[in-house]
Amino acid sequence: MAVDALPIPLTWILLAILPVLFYIYAVRPLQLFKKIGVPGPAPWPIIGNLLDHIKDGVWNIEGQVKRTEKYGSVYGMFGGGLTGVFITDPEMLQDVFVKKFHSFTNRQPKDLYMKVKPVGRMLTQLLDEDWKNVRSTISPAFSGGKLKQMAGPMNSCAGLLIENIGKFAENGESFEVKELTGAFTMDVITRTAFGTQIDSQKNPKDPFVIYSKKMLDRSVTIVTLMFMFFPKLVGSLMEKFEYSVFPADAKQFFYNVFDQLMELRQNEGQERVDFLQLMMNAHKEHDKEQAGTGDVKLHGHKQALTKDDVVANGILFFIAGYETTATTMAFTLYNLALNQDKQDKVRLEISKVMEDRDFVNYEDVHKMPYLEMCILETLRMYSPASMTLRTSSEEVKLKWLTIPKNMLVAVPVLAIHYDAERWPEPYKFIPERFTKEEKEKRGAYDWLPFGAGPRNCIGMRLALFELKLGLARLLNTYRVKTAPDTDIPLKMKKFKKFPIPENGIRLRVELAGPVTD
Image (tube, rainbow, N blue to C red; front, side):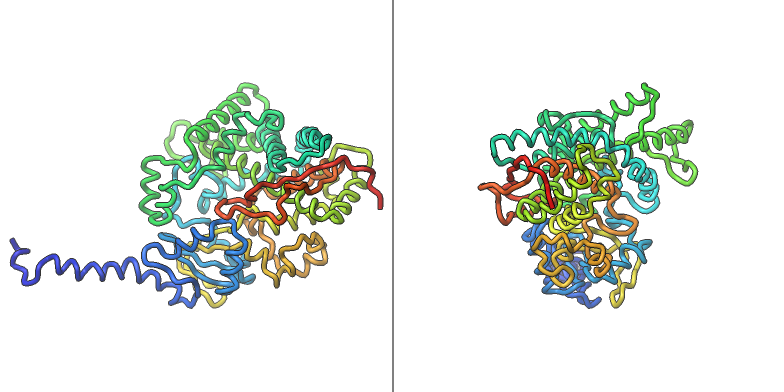
């Protein structure tokens, strides 16, 4: 054979080639940040800085703050198969979020986009024109006019919340706040967005509750870990075998629920004014356009929604709206329990607006600026998102830095929210940071719990309205206090996506007397 005629054994040749290949594919790519002048922790071959990511977890204030203090407002990290530059510089953030948004429209590189349903059709995952189309279709659900119509169902849900909390006020027992605020927000979402009533506050065993928690509490699997190391390869395999990050039974439950809701409305022949109806109307246009053709056509300037679009974004809206709002509501009550003087001020404001009424309408919450300040300060301290991501669709110049095409740009929200230069005494609860005068002094990208720019959180207005209404109703009736089993300070689970205390938030309430100046 020809190989036998070689003067050097084949094994030796392979041994000589392997180090070269290892350098080309595992070491040389790790020189990228050094070449473009970006500091950062030293990476390991193949795994990059993945061990640092795993050690720090996801929702970790101290980890983000220390890294920013050590490396500055721009630093780079390698995460297995993913490379990202972390930015807190205000001018660069303005370019990423607004001025050069056309170059940072997407949250992940196109070759990492997974088409697995339902995740692949969620608004948070969509790309370019596809994202713009779905976003513009869904946006009208969050207009002021629509929010006004949601006040009735929200007040009904808030009445149940007050009734449930009243049981603990009678005997002075402490309770897990998130359990009650979570039931409230779940009821609000199902009623206002999907026109169905589940009453999770009285029935915690409702399938909606069980499967929603299953969606949120899913654990990290070997497949998702492998995706971090080899995103292109594992992503394509996940797509081929239709591997979903959600539990199969929970996913099927929501598909069945949306099928039933859509069929019921079609049979009724009566349109409603909510999130589901907007998507259903767009889906009907899809059916008209699809008749007799296998291609998706444009309806006017927009592409009609498919059934998968409706279901995927229904699931996204339900899960995101439930978890983030419930968590923020619980943390706001915790902050007010620890700061009774702030609570006095909030309760006085609510009392003046409400007088002898219980019902809180859309106009009422706009007359409660101090309540809003308390919520905004809580969102600074306990932002639902620890980080927000964008990807460069082309080579982009940001001040002195040239970002290559297809690079992740990560914005460490917690590092910004706990930056002592932006926020003096960042670990203190100071609602007065959000007076009109103080906000005018601050940069536009110093507060980012909902992101910023055209791709910010679409449900921000609804979440703030729900928070204000629920808290106004609760604080108009009860005073919130700490209990012997309240953790002070809270110890956070750093490996969770959302801010979750290790021992929960336990508080107690008592019926409040008249509020006076």
